[in-house]
Image (cartoon, one colour):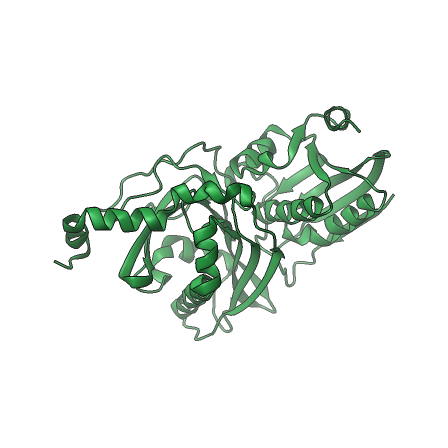
Length: 258
Length: 118
């Protein structure tokens, strides 16, 4: 028999999200069986999201990684709520160039589906998406669909540490299929880390702070889930590449490359 | 600022099953108590670990992430993880996140024990 109790003191919460309301019902997305994409700009490549199911670490293939990217906004005159509000409202603008986030113009709210067009090696574009499964004033969480590189939950949050806002991205992910798993080992982890660290750098700059993000990563489970190797049939990289090869005129029009 | 409290208590339900009774909030800050409770529950030789959420007040996405970490540990030990006494809201969240495909959900601990056959 054992009994344990913890109470966070509120001074420097090490985790995210923080400051939960007593009822979380309004913060979570309603149950979703398959994703439906709303209106998207004509320039967006809208593939691999409509009708797809969500996948989390249980459904993924590769090793399970926990990654935590952080940046401290020293001297910024903003509360965690203000940082998150800005982040929700301007989310895609903080991404590195060549990557596009097509979400609702109203910002980020539980149940929203966003389309992602991501820069991939060889000048390719990978079309995929995310669902906002959770959002409150100090955090929000994305979950990925079938075909995405990762079966993942990604939580974006902010909290105070010694009176300075700290912004954090916490990712719990497995590569979705064997091809992605190999890609992760070759270049994917490096690319993923650079992506989110650049995002945090850009977010910090929005608050007039020049800071470099830090990264902590842990392999939580080294085993691969071979029963999920069949996920490769949804692989968004393969499907996006095939689409570009078979629709070259639409692709060139979309990118303005013609 | 976070002002959450997690309380956990471990009960051995049968020679092959232990319950971790969770009260209060489950957030990422709950990792210490929850993992300590799991170590205690596992120490009895349990093959089935039942999370009893009857006292759960609040769980955010950090708490859901913690359940995955716990699930990995349970599976590594060749054990099964089950959840009981979840409100309809949290049942929906486990369905949304598809954690219910790996964590069997039952109404009561007795139902879970019967399903597990321990």
